Length: 221
Ligand SMILES: Nc1ncnc2c1ncn2[C@@H]1O[C@H](COP(=O)(O)OP(=O)(O)OP(=O)(O)O)[C@@H](O)[C@H]1O
Ligand SMILES: [Mg+2]
Image 1 (cartoon, rainbow, N blue to C red):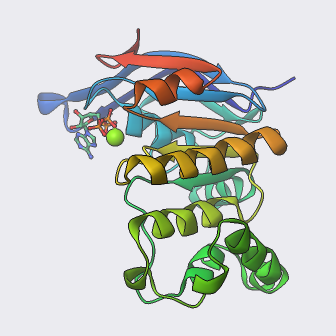
Image 2 (cartoon, rainbow, N blue to C red):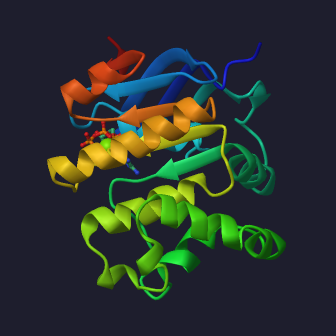
């Protein structure tokens, strides 16, 4: 069986030879289907970089990254966005909602036109499940932080991804809202046997995951 995510000897550097920033130094790990893994480590240790690489939003300098067995390094941009759209849901720390689109429109944002049409009622029922049925036509500026993050999670889940990447999804929320958010992600992951990679600074939360990957100085500790 192929792992959901497989990093093999992956390095990431930024900048020119003379001023090289080494971010990740030959790291290897895999995440299985239906596994919940946390990534922890000090600020600047490369956690967000791993999320960006796994999502194909950043290119590895060296090494191999496979998503469900498919190599994504060196793949053309349009093919990469196809792989991303089919496999991956991403939740960022700052929610990245589009300010002039309603909650519902934000959930449908990344879908193609026919999918938008087909998944409209799915989007409404996700928002309903997340306690936002009375908010679907509101703009992000009219929503609380917790509500905005629930919209962002609904957007990540709308096309039923097999992998969820969440970069400090609760970083901007109080503890009650954080717990709600994490429960939503864990429930989805467990119910639909989806792998969840969760970057967090919160140790009790990391402990709730099946496994912890600890980064230190660009390597796995
Ligand atoms: N575009 C870039 N150019 C140069 N250096 C970068 C770039 N993006 C990130 N870095 C550097 O890479 C390192 C890792 O960054 P990354 O965002 O992955 O860290 P992180 O573990 O997510 O930190 P935090 O906990 O603060 O979010 C940092 O030292 C950062 O300055
Ligand atoms: Mg980060």
